[in-house]
Length: 144
Image (tube, rainbow, N blue to C red; front, side, top):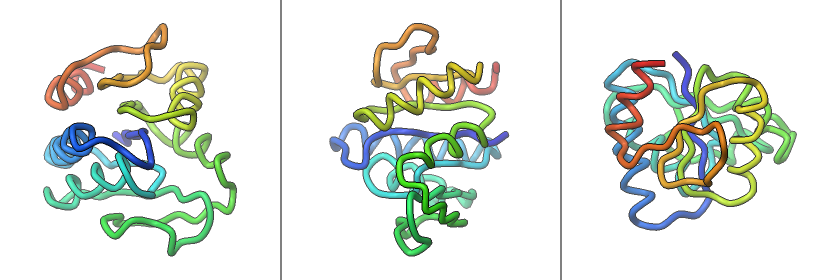
């Protein structure tokens, strides 16, 4: 299963810890991570995946060299924020962590595409499944 993790390019220490833990759990469960490939939540989740020996695909807004150092595979789109469509369309499920409007757009796109969206301390959006820990998010993925 390909799982997109979306969240802010900048994040709090708590969100960074949650993202890194989530990345580790996703890799241990054998999921492939998709993300926007930059900093903040995206970098932390990629680091967790890398630490657990998994694969992180960064779908980048511009050039291949823009990605964080934990990405296994970089996909340069040259699409800017429109890359959010590629991130969501390529995923079987989406987990949203704290973020701003780019994150909100990914949540909305996923719900419109009828993809399951799990929110971990993220936006309050009707149709999104809420969890309180990375462990709960990983467990919920197993039931989808």
